[in-house]
Length: 269
Image 1 (cartoon, rainbow, N blue to C red):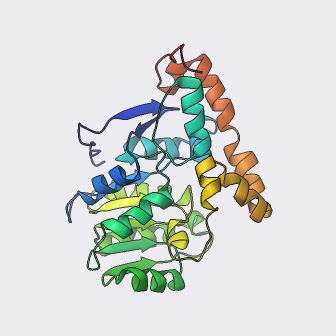
Image 2 (image 1 turned 30 degrees about the horizontal axis):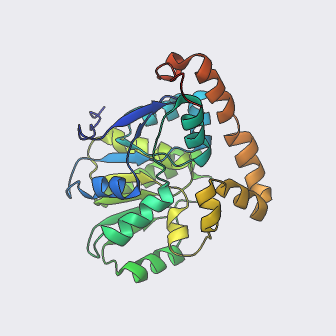
Image 3 (image 1 turned 135 degrees about the vertical axis):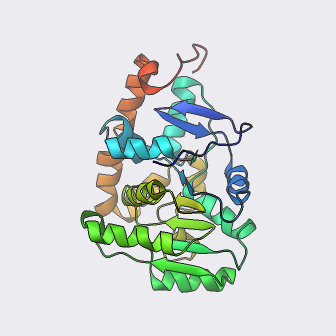
């Protein structure tokens, strides 16, 4: 098992629902990732949202918990978890969604000749990404639907990353599939670069999917826009996969230590 790579000592982290969130905004997190030199040992980034925190604290998925324990950088994606952290525990954790982080990397840090490997996506996404950012060194593997239940297909994803060393490795097959593959890549101990589990971010960046209008994002109700525009898929995601984070937060309020947290500040609202 490879040794987990530590964050720089000047990066403050705050524990919330068993996750050590980095107190970095989008620009700060992107700069930290970009500061890793080419060829650096593989480390990976996760951007927890309500569904991820539910999987850790309510479903208690042991593999997912292990993935988060070994992640190099955790940034706050969800508006609802961020609000819970502030209102119930007085924790001010900057919100750094995976989609914003991905955009910041491409807009301000990734150079045309940087080596990039992508697991997931589509050919159209790849062509749009290359055209927009004049990329010249991109490798992509798109596994078939249901690949996560086929060990041979999972191994092909892992092998592709190992065979295509890159400075940035984007896993965009959806959670928890992306995290499961990332874990296996990290466990091999020979990969390089920074892995990013960032959901639908590359489709947003290339215009193949549309994010909620800015006003929804600023108000922290991007989930509401998704629910209205795609209720068939989003009902389960919001009410089954994500809503139990409220229960986890309530339990943590009663017993913070069980969630890796200190007793909440009594002066918090």
